[in-house]
Image (cartoon, rainbow, N blue to C red; front, side, top):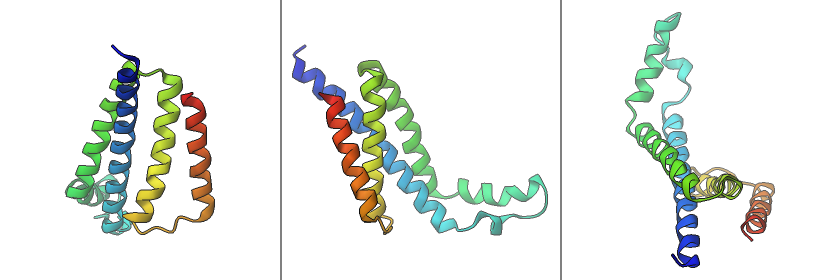
Length: 133
Protein backbone atom coordinates (compact mmCIF):
# COMPACT_ATOMS: atom_id res chain seq x y z
CA UNK A 1 0.00 0.00 0.00
CA UNK A 2 1.43 3.43 -0.88
CA UNK A 3 2.59 5.61 1.98
CA UNK A 4 0.19 8.47 1.19
CA UNK A 5 -2.76 6.08 1.43
CA UNK A 6 -1.70 4.99 4.94
CA UNK A 7 -1.31 8.59 6.05
CA UNK A 8 -4.74 9.45 4.62
CA UNK A 9 -6.32 6.47 6.36
CA UNK A 10 -4.64 7.31 9.68
CA UNK A 11 -5.65 10.97 9.66
CA UNK A 12 -9.17 10.11 8.48
CA UNK A 13 -9.52 7.82 11.49
CA UNK A 14 -8.14 10.49 13.84
CA UNK A 15 -10.48 13.14 12.42
CA UNK A 16 -13.45 10.76 12.71
CA UNK A 17 -12.72 10.20 16.40
CA UNK A 18 -12.46 13.95 17.00
CA UNK A 19 -15.61 14.74 15.00
CA UNK A 20 -17.68 12.16 16.87
CA UNK A 21 -16.39 13.42 20.23
CA UNK A 22 -17.13 17.05 19.37
CA UNK A 23 -20.61 16.24 18.10
CA UNK A 24 -21.42 14.06 21.09
CA UNK A 25 -20.17 16.57 23.64
CA UNK A 26 -22.03 19.47 22.01
CA UNK A 27 -25.28 17.51 21.82
CA UNK A 28 -25.02 16.40 25.45
CA UNK A 29 -24.21 19.96 26.57
CA UNK A 30 -27.19 21.32 24.60
CA UNK A 31 -29.49 18.68 26.11
CA UNK A 32 -28.32 19.39 29.63
CA UNK A 33 -28.82 23.13 29.13
CA UNK A 34 -32.39 22.49 28.00
CA UNK A 35 -33.08 20.29 31.01
CA UNK A 36 -31.66 22.83 33.44
CA UNK A 37 -30.72 22.06 37.01
CA UNK A 38 -31.37 18.38 37.65
CA UNK A 39 -31.95 19.03 41.36
CA UNK A 40 -35.27 20.63 40.42
CA UNK A 41 -36.35 17.37 38.80
CA UNK A 42 -35.85 15.24 41.91
CA UNK A 43 -39.10 13.52 42.84
CA UNK A 44 -38.39 12.93 46.53
CA UNK A 45 -35.79 11.95 49.11
CA UNK A 46 -33.29 9.12 48.75
CA UNK A 47 -32.48 7.08 45.67
CA UNK A 48 -36.05 7.19 44.38
CA UNK A 49 -35.74 10.94 44.13
CA UNK A 50 -33.23 10.50 41.32
CA UNK A 51 -35.71 8.72 39.07
CA UNK A 52 -37.05 12.08 37.82
CA UNK A 53 -33.69 13.39 36.60
CA UNK A 54 -32.76 10.00 35.14
CA UNK A 55 -36.08 9.77 33.31
CA UNK A 56 -35.71 13.35 32.02
CA UNK A 57 -32.19 12.76 30.73
CA UNK A 58 -32.96 9.40 29.11
CA UNK A 59 -36.10 10.76 27.42
CA UNK A 60 -34.20 13.62 25.76
CA UNK A 61 -33.62 12.82 22.06
CA UNK A 62 -30.73 15.32 21.93
CA UNK A 63 -29.02 13.61 24.87
CA UNK A 64 -29.55 10.18 23.31
CA UNK A 65 -28.07 11.36 20.00
CA UNK A 66 -25.06 12.71 21.89
CA UNK A 67 -24.66 9.45 23.79
CA UNK A 68 -24.82 7.54 20.51
CA UNK A 69 -22.07 9.75 19.08
CA UNK A 70 -19.94 9.12 22.17
CA UNK A 71 -20.46 5.35 21.81
CA UNK A 72 -19.47 5.52 18.14
CA UNK A 73 -16.50 7.63 19.19
CA UNK A 74 -15.35 4.80 21.47
CA UNK A 75 -15.42 2.26 18.64
CA UNK A 76 -13.81 4.69 16.21
CA UNK A 77 -11.00 5.17 18.74
CA UNK A 78 -10.53 1.39 18.96
CA UNK A 79 -10.18 1.24 15.18
CA UNK A 80 -7.83 4.22 15.18
CA UNK A 81 -5.58 2.58 17.77
CA UNK A 82 -5.38 -0.50 15.56
CA UNK A 83 -3.86 1.49 12.68
CA UNK A 84 -2.15 4.50 14.33
CA UNK A 85 0.56 4.61 16.98
CA UNK A 86 -0.78 5.59 20.39
CA UNK A 87 1.90 8.29 20.68
CA UNK A 88 0.25 10.11 17.74
CA UNK A 89 -3.39 9.03 18.05
CA UNK A 90 -3.99 10.06 21.66
CA UNK A 91 -2.55 13.59 21.52
CA UNK A 92 -3.90 14.25 18.02
CA UNK A 93 -7.47 13.23 18.85
CA UNK A 94 -7.38 15.02 22.21
CA UNK A 95 -6.02 18.24 20.75
CA UNK A 96 -8.33 18.25 17.73
CA UNK A 97 -11.24 17.64 20.08
CA UNK A 98 -10.08 20.56 22.24
CA UNK A 99 -9.91 22.86 19.23
CA UNK A 100 -13.19 21.60 17.78
CA UNK A 101 -14.97 21.99 21.11
CA UNK A 102 -13.86 25.62 21.35
CA UNK A 103 -15.15 26.33 17.85
CA UNK A 104 -18.40 24.39 18.33
CA UNK A 105 -19.02 26.05 21.70
CA UNK A 106 -18.68 29.45 20.04
CA UNK A 107 -20.77 28.64 16.95
CA UNK A 108 -23.48 26.26 18.16
CA UNK A 109 -23.75 26.84 21.91
CA UNK A 110 -23.15 30.61 21.69
CA UNK A 111 -20.52 30.47 24.44
CA UNK A 112 -18.03 33.25 25.01
CA UNK A 113 -14.66 31.82 23.97
CA UNK A 114 -12.04 34.40 24.89
CA UNK A 115 -8.65 35.13 23.31
CA UNK A 116 -6.81 33.05 25.88
CA UNK A 117 -8.69 29.90 24.80
CA UNK A 118 -8.08 30.61 21.12
CA UNK A 119 -4.38 31.12 21.85
CA UNK A 120 -4.31 27.83 23.74
CA UNK A 121 -5.98 26.14 20.73
CA UNK A 122 -3.30 27.62 18.46
CA UNK A 123 -0.54 26.19 20.65
CA UNK A 124 -2.28 22.82 20.60
CA UNK A 125 -2.29 22.94 16.77
CA UNK A 126 1.42 23.65 16.74
CA UNK A 127 2.00 20.73 19.10
CA UNK A 128 0.07 18.33 16.85
CA UNK A 129 2.03 19.51 13.81
CA UNK A 130 5.28 18.87 15.68
CA UNK A 131 4.09 15.40 16.67
CA UNK A 132 3.01 14.51 13.15
CA UNK A 133 6.45 15.15 11.64
